[in-house]
Image (cartoon, rainbow over all chains, first blue to last red; front, side):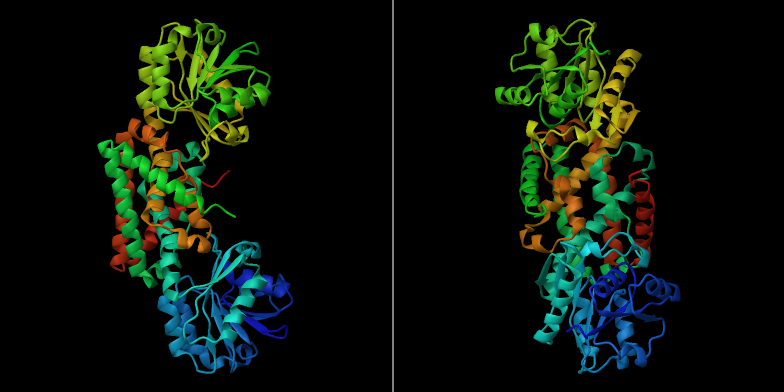
Length: 283
Length: 283
């Protein structure tokens, strides 16, 4: 990757448009592809891309050295199946997909041998979607995970790292796709399942006027994109289900302790919880 | 309550000391009682009380018109049992206790007939404790609930309301003790149970470097005072257990939908969750 590298962003939603805006503002030549003309128009008008289209053509796609996929996982796979002939030979492909095990090998196995896919996950999603919610500041201080496999070259890993740096991520790490998926099932997917279940537990509108910050913080992510998340859950199903089991077991242990008045167990769980949580305070 | 009213705060922890600081700064004469001399010394040195002691004497307590109890619930009951002879005749007693059903009638029933207890709950707790964590700013925009019974006079309700106003609460509401306890079981106790169970689910220290904001927000309250909360849970046990059941049922419904690949149910739960959560956005 060098200053002459042209970067194409496929998908100009919240994350894709934030990538485009920051890369463009940092001096890179940035193209955009969106399913909607109005999104392309907005991106051009607001100066976050140099060129854009809704038509996927070899003429357009092959002018880019780096292609970042910021679309839902299934669409990503379909896009590669349908349009991979359009890539420039030697192009490096990367992504922002929230699951890796089910995606990375699949894409790498089907991809042309003269194009390389290096997977990455910017952990900076928000509960809003669409180009109007873009905000490159969400990357500042956030985590960016690269998940290479044995098929990846150092050059591609370096390119993904460089993109993470330009975007301003606080920490860039390397994990295997499997480590990534265990981590994401616990830290992100399980937490979303909890927030959704809590909101579904009762019609809580009569409680709005009395809430403190704990309920607000805990349910921020209950405002969730219902088109994207079921797909992510399905693609990481086994790992997510085992994290859900772990949580349910502990929740049930606490419930039994409360029911039987076993204050020692409640207290011990709180001590463990407090101790573990301290590590997660922002540095 | 008038500008001449002298206010005593019993318990100078995070909430009690924040009350003292704000009331004192607003021009009221404020006394403090703490179990520890070092806390009294700090409160005097930092100018948040006019006088303070660790000794509960009639001479001291009877000089106050209003007494606010900011101690754990059991201690509150014990204090009243032991020291209620010390109150000035006509004094108004209030509190900050996080449960009401198990406390309010108990205190009212045992209290001298020339002293009135009006219960209140400032919903502005924090995950830190002690006088050094005091911060009267937590009251700004927060909710303050008064839970009168048939035994309360309008004058006492007005006094509790006035205290809420001086402290700067955003909204002051009246609920029955029962309504309060259902609300608090769902919005606060259940959320703390969830956060604690999540942290207990696994030793997560290897995940610290990869976390996004969802996990941090959801587990902020997993940093919990293990001396206070088991007591609060026990005093609201039946209500808390029924809220835990509601949540567990929904969590299990979501888990089954994920296991069976029932994306329609997952999506529907997310739509409900998003819709309900919107009402909780800060005004």
